Image (cartoon, rainbow, N blue to C red; front, side, top):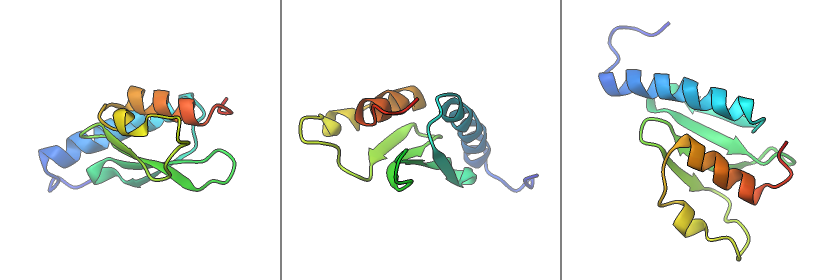
Length: 98
């Protein structure tokens, strides 16, 4: 599927990207894998389908691409890392997720 020319970081990103995508699918969170070699995944608004968060599986970093409501402490959320934290904050903002 991928050549042996991938770096160890790229191989790790692909493994983590697959894992993160599976967790998002299990949670019924709409998402699109943008580039597996860097582990980039976009999380989508469940209604509009627009990108609202980006997640990088190798580093665990996530950002909001659409700033949530004012009462949500989104800057604090972005200091955290990991797919499980990403899912937790996504669900806080998009309460209508299954």
